[in-house]
Length: 111
Length: 115
Image (cartoon, each protein chain N blue to C red):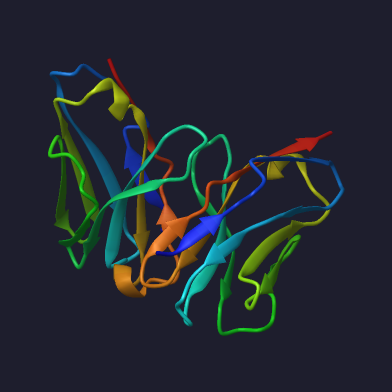
């Protein structure tokens, strides 16, 4: 079965600094998608960024970028120029035949 | 309209009550999902509807009963719940059927408290 591991239950970052959230996954599938979702206190899960496994180029969305290492099965999220509004739970997710969430990382942004 | 709308936002119910949660999307999505989420935990999949038919039931107790009256609407009927069922219930939808989807859109959830 596929598993998604986020080894950092909590992280903190100073406002305007950069932080990297880790995610590793285990799969025998060759074709899949990876996602980072953000869940602020408002509760809604918001898609931050998506990566197709067949693409070698790392996805980027404004201040958010990923480091996708397919051989290592690693999918980390880098947040640059952190803002107070980035404070939230971040879930890494995997979609192959089924959809799996990681355990989440709670990010605090320090003013 | 790019939203998944859930009502109510908060619900308190007794263990003998019957209530329903509602989820609506007008994006033409073909799959809709119910998730249960406990505090500081990832969402757990409960049910999946593809083309208005139940395609996945993750061994959810019968006190939870899903219904998909049409392609835009998903309900979750609740009856004889237990206090441990208190959680955030999230609805999601995806453009493609569950086995092929590449992105899911989530609602804001219903915070359910069973007393």
